[in-house]
Image (cartoon, rainbow, N blue to C red):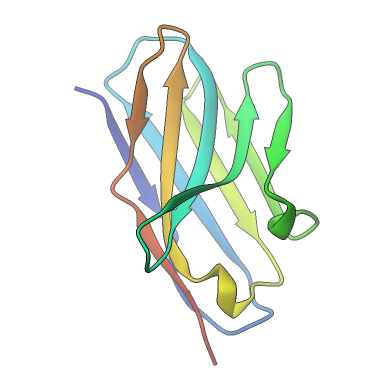
Length: 116
Protein backbone atom coordinates (compact mmCIF):
# COMPACT_ATOMS: atom_id res chain seq x y z
CA UNK A 1 0.00 0.00 0.00
CA UNK A 2 1.36 3.38 -1.02
CA UNK A 3 1.70 5.92 1.75
CA UNK A 4 2.70 9.56 1.55
CA UNK A 5 3.58 11.29 4.80
CA UNK A 6 3.88 15.06 4.94
CA UNK A 7 5.48 17.14 7.67
CA UNK A 8 6.58 20.70 8.31
CA UNK A 9 3.33 22.62 8.49
CA UNK A 10 2.45 25.02 11.26
CA UNK A 11 1.69 28.58 12.23
CA UNK A 12 3.92 31.31 10.87
CA UNK A 13 3.70 35.10 10.72
CA UNK A 14 3.35 36.90 7.39
CA UNK A 15 6.76 37.17 5.76
CA UNK A 16 8.00 34.04 7.47
CA UNK A 17 9.19 30.72 6.06
CA UNK A 18 8.34 27.05 6.34
CA UNK A 19 9.69 23.93 4.68
CA UNK A 20 7.36 21.04 3.91
CA UNK A 21 8.62 17.49 3.46
CA UNK A 22 6.97 14.43 1.98
CA UNK A 23 8.17 10.84 1.85
CA UNK A 24 6.46 8.14 -0.19
CA UNK A 25 6.68 4.45 0.60
CA UNK A 26 5.11 1.23 -0.59
CA UNK A 27 5.52 1.81 -4.31
CA UNK A 28 8.08 0.35 -6.67
CA UNK A 29 6.67 2.31 -9.59
CA UNK A 30 8.74 4.90 -11.38
CA UNK A 31 7.43 8.38 -10.68
CA UNK A 32 6.53 10.78 -13.45
CA UNK A 33 5.91 13.77 -11.18
CA UNK A 34 6.00 14.71 -7.52
CA UNK A 35 4.16 17.77 -6.38
CA UNK A 36 2.37 19.88 -3.83
CA UNK A 37 -1.24 20.97 -3.92
CA UNK A 38 -3.20 23.06 -1.46
CA UNK A 39 -6.77 22.92 -0.35
CA UNK A 40 -8.50 26.00 1.03
CA UNK A 41 -11.84 26.54 2.79
CA UNK A 42 -13.80 25.71 -0.37
CA UNK A 43 -12.10 22.28 -0.52
CA UNK A 44 -10.87 22.94 -4.03
CA UNK A 45 -7.47 21.31 -4.55
CA UNK A 46 -5.07 23.53 -6.52
CA UNK A 47 -1.60 22.81 -7.81
CA UNK A 48 1.14 24.77 -6.07
CA UNK A 49 4.28 23.28 -7.59
CA UNK A 50 5.45 20.11 -9.27
CA UNK A 51 8.72 18.55 -10.30
CA UNK A 52 9.02 16.18 -13.24
CA UNK A 53 11.35 13.21 -13.50
CA UNK A 54 13.11 15.15 -16.27
CA UNK A 55 13.97 17.85 -13.75
CA UNK A 56 11.51 20.39 -15.07
CA UNK A 57 9.66 22.50 -12.54
CA UNK A 58 6.21 24.06 -12.64
CA UNK A 59 4.79 26.67 -10.25
CA UNK A 60 1.48 28.40 -9.97
CA UNK A 61 2.02 32.12 -10.67
CA UNK A 62 1.08 33.21 -7.16
CA UNK A 63 4.05 31.39 -5.57
CA UNK A 64 6.74 31.99 -8.17
CA UNK A 65 9.85 33.63 -6.68
CA UNK A 66 8.66 32.71 -3.16
CA UNK A 67 8.40 28.91 -3.14
CA UNK A 68 10.95 26.34 -4.28
CA UNK A 69 10.20 22.69 -4.93
CA UNK A 70 12.90 20.04 -4.83
CA UNK A 71 12.97 16.29 -4.66
CA UNK A 72 14.78 13.02 -5.01
CA UNK A 73 13.02 10.57 -7.34
CA UNK A 74 15.17 7.64 -6.26
CA UNK A 75 14.21 8.19 -2.63
CA UNK A 76 10.65 9.31 -3.46
CA UNK A 77 10.96 12.43 -1.33
CA UNK A 78 9.78 15.91 -2.20
CA UNK A 79 10.15 19.24 -0.44
CA UNK A 80 8.60 22.67 -0.64
CA UNK A 81 10.53 25.64 0.71
CA UNK A 82 8.08 28.47 1.29
CA UNK A 83 9.40 31.99 1.85
CA UNK A 84 7.71 35.36 2.18
CA UNK A 85 4.51 33.66 3.24
CA UNK A 86 1.24 35.56 2.95
CA UNK A 87 -2.09 35.06 4.72
CA UNK A 88 -3.57 33.86 1.43
CA UNK A 89 -1.11 30.94 1.47
CA UNK A 90 -3.06 29.51 4.42
CA UNK A 91 -4.31 26.06 3.43
CA UNK A 92 -3.87 22.35 3.87
CA UNK A 93 -0.90 21.34 1.72
CA UNK A 94 -1.03 17.89 0.18
CA UNK A 95 1.77 15.88 -1.34
CA UNK A 96 1.10 14.10 -4.63
CA UNK A 97 2.92 11.53 -6.72
CA UNK A 98 1.97 10.38 -10.21
CA UNK A 99 3.50 7.27 -11.70
CA UNK A 100 4.35 6.31 -15.27
CA UNK A 101 1.57 3.70 -14.98
CA UNK A 102 -0.95 6.48 -14.46
CA UNK A 103 -1.51 5.98 -10.75
CA UNK A 104 -2.13 9.04 -8.59
CA UNK A 105 -1.45 9.04 -4.86
CA UNK A 106 -2.10 11.66 -2.17
CA UNK A 107 -0.94 12.36 1.33
CA UNK A 108 -3.35 13.35 4.08
CA UNK A 109 -2.05 16.90 4.17
CA UNK A 110 -0.34 19.28 6.54
CA UNK A 111 -1.89 22.57 7.67
CA UNK A 112 -0.07 25.83 7.00
CA UNK A 113 -1.48 28.90 8.74
CA UNK A 114 -0.07 32.34 8.01
CA UNK A 115 -1.30 34.83 10.53
CA UNK A 116 -0.07 37.53 12.86
